[in-house]
Image (cartoon, rainbow, N blue to C red; front, top):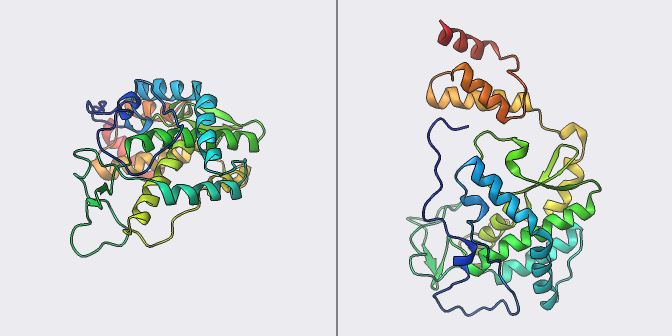
Length: 287
């Protein structure tokens, strides 16, 4: 939950605009027809309502777009199956082929590196951006995430897609990333997983990151762990944790109306019992 206005970034690209590459690239995605919807990527949504709209549109085309990603991998000789080993193989292929952007202005930013080199990390290597993926790879990232999600659904009976904000597990989130959910357990955010994996893999391919690159199959491995009832999130505990962060960061206790809004955001019907220190802050506000 944010107490400051949250606005959609005007410069957010759409998938339709990402198809129009201006630079010349050595690699190709032969036969791949990128997603062409006229909406922004899910991590660019700026309001809860916009996040729900974008996630809903993405879920509506999940099977179609997953099939497009599967066909590309098949042409490359990569067999996709709903298990961790198969997705580890997908990750290895992606790590070898992922491309950074060569579009004008894509070299504006320097990446955050876990182990900083002396001075500022390079904004580009060999003409490739170190922070932005090639536009068509950003389209492919979504399709691969949807394919991963479809495989997660196949591997876990009862699992399905859900709009992230409908579950309301994180008050500060306005992301349009769709979730994989079963029995009220969040099993993963596969579109985000793939997007983040590709950025790490790009840094490794450009020689800027020599630490461990995670295996893409870990998303499938987590299905078993997260399906354990003992690992279910506690909405009241998450509410208290968020409230503590708010009071520590901003130095004040939200009003009762804001507290109820925050509780609702976490799927609670009312306020849970507060720890003594937070209750004392609330009492001081009321007086």
